Length: 401
Image 1 (cartoon, rainbow, N blue to C red):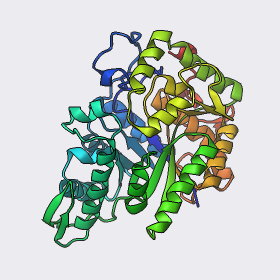
Image 2: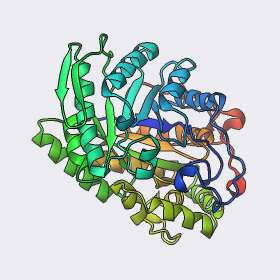
Image 3: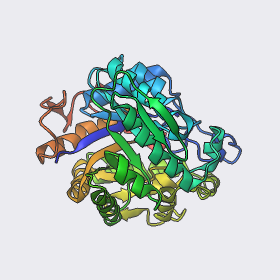
Image 4: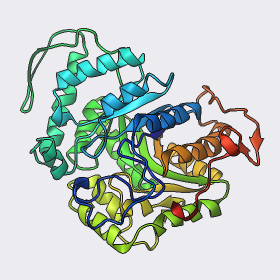
């Protein structure tokens, strides 16, 4: 079982601090309690293309693109980026409650033909009622998961290439059809920590994603989903969503993490925690419980840092350390059964180079990657780092700016 490495495409904006355009106060509508932000990079197509091309060059298999009212549309943005990349796949996040399942199946089929098979699907049921209502969705938490269950049954049904009928609580489809099914079928990624989410994963998905909790908690989730899938006669693979701060030494990595914290004043953290605390997402509440809103003891497990979650919703932890230490933690999660690792960092362009040039060779040396080499494999090193970027390495920025 090889490790599959993926990166993140910041279609909500990027920057050199944790305080960016991500929606952590009233969905990004009210900003009056948030510290003014400098150095924010707009998610224009030119910048996103830089990240996508870097990810491809560095040997990442795919990039995850988020979904929400605070970011660019994932379908349109990524299909544009297929035209400036060759091998990179796109893990497109979308919300099943705001689109017809038959239309989604058709869109996926079209995407596969345009991109020559480079689509992966990330189904986001949604844990924030305020955000869902902006899309016109007024179902409660558990009913959203029940709808997702039906949605995925319809998608897979109409991919069969024959008229498909379905009668459920949320969808009634007569003769649903995708005339030309996608080839290959896009793998379906999905996450959810609530009792309502587990059976949906067991019945429908290819890869179950968890946010970056300590290994023992991740193991419990894997055992839970694996047990439910076995009852359904299915096998589910597993992935994890994390940030990363990897440097030539552990000291440098932790110094960078601490500089990111320096940008966060108490009011900013308080506003973020207040907004995130309203989330219906069980996964989000588990993220918040890892740090309790406090800056104390943020290293919640060796090299696992919860500082990101002080202000950012969703994935709130980062692997922090030397390249070898970060590789150690990846190997530890991999031993539990995690195959897919979806990483990100601030800013995403520079951190992609730090990881790709530092951690990926460590993983390759340990035999954790498949036989397909990165274009950078074997490139002579300069000052201990591969010389693939201008100056031989990403910049180490001071003060988190």
